[in-house]
Every structure is written in C-alpha cells, then in structure tokens.
Image 1 (cartoon, rainbow, N blue to C red):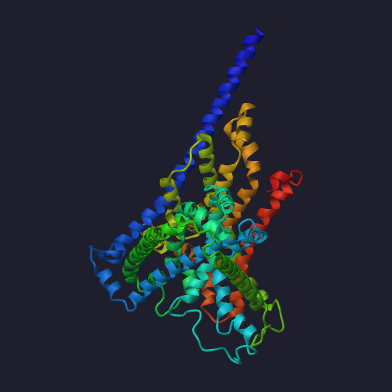
Image 2: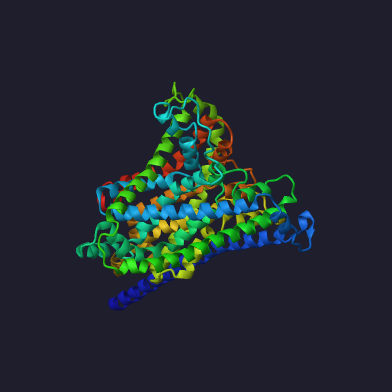
Length: 584
C-alpha cells in the first residue's frame, strides 16, 4: 500500500512538473510573436500611413483623390539635390570611417592592456546620447570652441574667432565627425559580441604562429569571418547616419539641411497642406537610404573582389607598421574627441564669463544650473518615465525571446534577425511620419503612452544585441542539473539563470535607458511636441545662442545614462557581495 502511495505521489509530481513545463513553454512562446508584432506592426503601418498623403490621399485635409502633386511640389523644392547628396555622402562616409576605426582598433590592440582600457571605456561612451555628443563636438571644434582657445593666440595668432563655418559647413564634415564619434562605440560593441562566434582567438593565434604580424593576422584571418556577422549592424548604422535628425540639426548645414531634417520641418509647418509634401519627402528618404544601402552592398562586392589576391598572396607583414600606427591614432583620436567635448560641456555649464581667446572661464559657478533647475525637474521626470517604461517592456520581451530559445533549444534564424533590425534599417522619419498621420486619423491622443511604445521600437533591438550573447553562452549544464533535481523550466529560470545573468541583464537595461533617453524624433513626433524631455530641450537650445544653458541640458541628458550604467555595475556586486563569480 505504501509503495502504491509512493508511486502515485511520484506520478503526481511528474504530472505537476509537466504541467509547469507546459505553462512556462507557452508563456515564453508568446514573447517572439509579441516582439514581431511590436517591431513589424508600427513600421508597416507607418509606411502605409505615409504612402497615402504622399500620393494626395488624406481626406482629413481635403485630399480625396490620388495625385502626383505632392511629388511635383517636392521635386520643385530648391536645393533638393543638395539635401539628397548630403544624406547619402554623410551616411556612407561616416559608416566607412567608423568601421575602419573599429577594424584597426581590434587589429592593433587585441589582447593588450590598452584594449582592456578601451573595453572599460565602452559602456561610458555608449551612455553618451547622440545629441549631447553633437553639442559637445560643436563646442569643441567651433571657431570659438575649446580647441581654438587652447591654441590661440600663441600658436594661431587669433585674438578673435576665425571666420569659418563649423559646424554647419556645406560639405557636412562636422556632421560626419559627430556621427563617427558615436558610431564607433556601437560597432565596437557588436564586433566584440561577434568575435567568439567566429573563433577569432583561434584564427588569430594560428596566423601568428605562421609568422603573420598582429595587424595582418587580424585582417587576413579574422576579418573575413567577422564581417558577415556584423553586416546587419553596419547596415543599421548606414540607415541611421543617412536619415538622422538631431545630430544633423546640431552639426549639419542648414541651407539646405539634409533631407530628413527638411521632412521634419515640413511636418511641423503651420500650413497643414505641407503634410502632403512631407509624406512624399519621407518616402524619398526611404529611397535615399535604400540607395545608400545598395551602394554599400556593391562596395562590399568590389572590396571582396579586389582583396581576394591580397588574402591569398601569403605576405605576412603587409602594411603592418602603418596599420598599427593608423589604428592607434584613429582609435585614441575618436575617444579623445568625445572625452574632450564632454570636458568642454562641463566648463561651459559652469562658466560665468568666457571671452575668446581665454582657455579657462572665470569664475566657475553653479549659477547656470540653479537658473535651469525649475525647468530641469519636469523634463527629467518625463525623460525617466519614458525611459523606464520602454526599457522594462523591452527587457521582458527580450528575456522572453531568449528564454524561448533556451526552452525549445532553437536559435533565431536570419528572418527573425532581420525583423529585429527592421526599425533600425528603415529611416525613422519615414514610418514615424506615417504613424503621426494614423494617430490623427484614429483620434489617438499624443502623450507619454504613445511615446513609450515608440521608444520600444528602438530600445528593444539594442537590448537584444546586448543580452543575447551572454544568455546563449551560459553553460546549459546548470539548467540540466536543475532539471535533474525536479525543477521546472520556470523555476530553473528564476532560481538559476536569472541570478547568473543578473549582471548582463542590468547592463542591457542600462543600454535601454541610454537609447531611450537619447531619442529625439519619436518623442517629438509621437508626443506632438507636448512631452518635454532633456533631449528635446537640448536640441532646441542648441540652435540658440546660450551655450551655458545648452551645456547644462546636454550634461543632464548625459548624467541619467551614466547613473544607469553605474547602477548596473554596482548592484550585482552589492547583491552578490559574498559570491564573487556572480558579480560579473
């Protein structure tokens, strides 16, 4: 009788565990579907919403029949060719330069003490929002900027600022510099995540054993297998650079500006009839970005064809010294520009009087911060609410997708990867402009909820990229051991995987906060200008003349992501202060 009872209890326990396993599998199985809906739905709806007005169909504004009039008006816009040229040239040039810097950095500093320092600087550099970096670059390199002050008058002879246009130069050089400074940390992040997948260490060590110089070993043995793994992130960088708005508004030319900036201006025009031309411009921006991507794809084919003989010629020290010198200079220059620009922001935020060519403001004061305090409070609160809301939604979906992979023992295919990058590959101005039209037609009130959901589109891909590698590399034997002790998949996640992944999850949340805090266009368009964040205020002030107040907002915008990264590093150490292995 006792044996029967024990057997029955055992069967009941197995049934209970099986039921828990089924419930958990179904629960996490919803995450990929919800993620696809979140990423694809708004993008597709936004493009559809932009297509109607682009061809004259917008009944709310009297557009009751299809027409090519918006395109005719757009093509007749003065300077349209310059707008398109700026978008393509700055997008391709900044991506090419950033990718070159990252490749040479990896080739030059791999497995060195300098590289460990660069890896430590990566999180702080990623935390710098695009607008803050652009404002800092403008303050650093302007005719009356910090760099010219340090050189004048001793080395330049200038007693007054020189007369040259920077930022805002017609060639877009300032815009390219600002984009490169922020693209390098992102491409370095995705490259570091991809290196283990292509067995970079084994390939490099084998090449070194065959007598190849370090730089040559990386370029010939590692790069051909690394680049296919980072191709989609590179395409995302091209899409971002060719259609960026906030950096272009701060550093780019204004007569005429890049196409995406013009589309935003047309959309904000009090004359509502400009909405038709704005929609046509949004679709043109989509075409411009696709043309830039196609040009890059053709360039890839050309480079692959030209480099085939170089990869196979057996030369072991091809441009090794020059490559190492160039990699060192470009890597530290890009980091130094960003750090120096932030230093300039700090000085301007505490400057009372700073005439040219003085290299130091006197006296230093916190009066500028006190003056901005009343308006900083509400903007900071709105920024935090949006960032926390979008990051929490995104992290739940990301963990759900990765947990679904773990439970079902599958890996995300190429199609799913493309869906993940979709909001990054499509110009935001193209589909966000359409979402604004649909928002008005469906009588959806612009506000914090719509902005949070809009931010999720851009936060989720970056958080997935940050967390996926750590999640997938977690030793599966821990889960197998928990299962052998009778733990269900849900209990295994809560008691085993979640504690072991607390540090990378915290870093992913910090990255999500940084990405959300830096979003300008989704906040402006989906919030209809009613939601004031630190980023929208910083970009608006950057076009004014008060450098002190602009610097205050730019630094406030930077402090929140920096605080997020600091908490991500400290919390695991505090929680697991008795368990050293779980702190990293």
